Picture: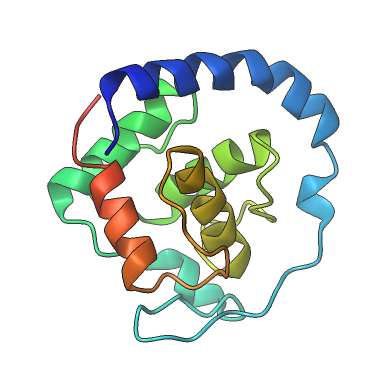
Length: 153
């Protein structure tokens, strides 16, 4: 579903929007946290400090998780090691990227909770996935995230 051209257009648009987004979205990190969503898909509990230490690949295998990490790095948000393990550093990079685009990821805490998943759903919708933005990393969100990360950088 995602093409190299689409990546290039969004990447260029993202770079141009960073300056404006950092000024406009400066208060995005101050939004109140939403409660964690519990589902078979498994959002980690944002109330648990230990949960941010765990890895949560949202259904991606190592190769696709590396593609996501590479994508984040390409956009200028360092996820740390490109190791295929979406841990705290990878999710902090994703949250910074999503917040820079005013998508409402909330606190940059490395925990893919309700706000982060909602922001990820909005981001994936930019690429035509048509997800319901509900903060639930259920099967449709996981399938879109899997498809989005089918190709590397």
